[in-house]
Amino acid sequence: MSVHDLRPGRDTDAEGFIALIGACWAEYPGCVLDIDGEVPELRALATYFRDQGGMLWAAERDGRVIGMVGTRPLKDDAAWEICRMYVDGAARGIGLAADLLRTAEDHACAAGAERLVLWTDTRFTRAHGFYEKQGYVRQGSIRILDDISNSLEFRYAKPARGLVVEALDAAAAASAERRLADLLVACVAEGASLEFLPPLSRDRAIAFWKQTSAAVAAGSRVLLVAWRDGVMAGSVTLDLATAQNQPHVAAIQKLLVDPGARRAGLGRALMRRAEQAARGHARRLLSLDTRAGSAAGALYRAEGWHELGRIPGFEVDAAREPCDTVFFWKSL
Image 1 (cartoon, helix red, strand yellow):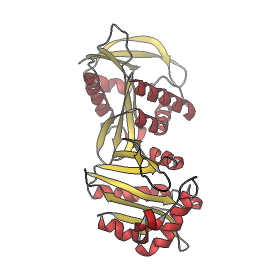
Image 2 (cartoon, helix red, strand yellow):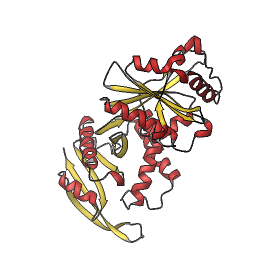
Image 3 (tube, one colour):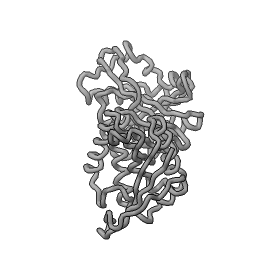
Image 4 (tube, one colour):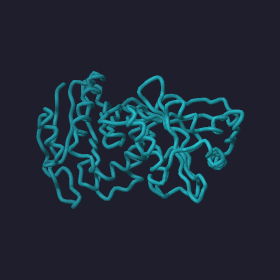
């Protein structure tokens, strides 16, 4: 099913919406749908969204609602919330969820959204994986609804448009592991000098990012992520775990840019944000290394990094042939 099969939701879809939400909730123990007591707006959901300046969509098959999503502006900032997103169990795996989400995101962006926000029950683990794949990361505290289902909700968010680089805290870093693993696998497959050799398994890539999340939680590493028009497309880490006599030093590691998003300024934006983060941690001297002849080396030189020297045959490439490694430094 494509986005063209979607249509605006109507108040007359109430029976279908309620049946869909009830079926999705029934997949998780303890989730009880009390319509009149807690969510009476489901009786006229299209009007509810319209009154808030938002929009509602439905996906239908053979006269039955099999998917839905809504979006509405938030009052506190230039953010829009993605909400009431559900897909029938029999309609999963065909791209409908991605179409629904993209439709809501496009509407919000066209209306001026700078940030996209959503809340999801802590029990909805399948939904968490989907949102994380779409570039959302956990942010803020857990929300307590005090409802009959004893619901607790995670807050997910991401920049809506443009090129944005942000530092992730431990919770956000953990929620980004799967998307960053895919990014790492793609970059290694393209021959990037990242200490791994192709083919890199996704499990090994996830293990690396789990270690990174733990280091972020411990305060020994900074993880910066870049989004381009709402897509998580790059990252870089700043290693703060230096020797006791080097409190002013940090190392930049694992600069990643999605192969499909290169030459758009992401690498440069990530490097500059990493230098800013280093200053914020009172680090005045930075180091990094890369394979000789790599495109990354040209970027580092253009950004004012100095080549310290190279070690012949320090690493091997995808063909297992020895390659030189070039070391750089920069004073802040």
